[in-house]
Image 1 (cartoon, rainbow, N blue to C red):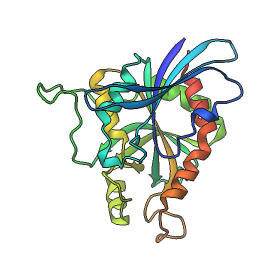
Image 2: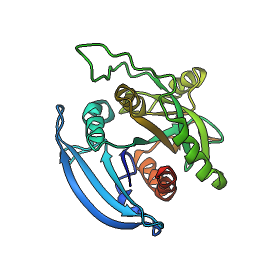
Image 3: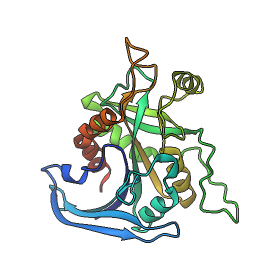
Length: 254
């Protein structure tokens, strides 16, 4: 049996309901996990695959709040990662929506993260009182990344080795900021992944980053550099890739 945890956000509220027909739901439970930084609502599901092997996944919506959507700069990432780790997962998957700066990563495609660039200026660590210097050289697991790339490559809508920049939000970036990020090597931009990557690296857990291209970054829309970004449209597009995300998740299960 595999046990994993998934951290997800924009457009992923119905991910559990999109469980493929090839999988059989065995159990589904809503939990609230205690942490030193507050409670974390978690959905725990059990299902079996076509070989009748049972798997367990804890799914955490990172923007959870009291009937509100917590803005990215107010997310308590330590609580979310703590909750994910409390299930003793074999690995954690972070699914995040991003704006793309690459022509070969248009909206609807999925990027497999290789590195992050953190421009938030916010310190995320579990060790405020005694410094722990976690290595970030290869903080996304290459074996998991290769499994996903191999499983989805035939669909031609997955891009490997993506560099994900994190900005503070909640506003989208300006075209000037996007041009600066491109100059520094970013392929896509979001508001959450780098923080989770740092905390998970501190705990030594395997980590896979899946970045859903949900919009062109500011100033990058082909043929229309002044195209505006609408969050509702972003959320709607992100929700269309649930099937491929499940294919990615399944490819990693043992």
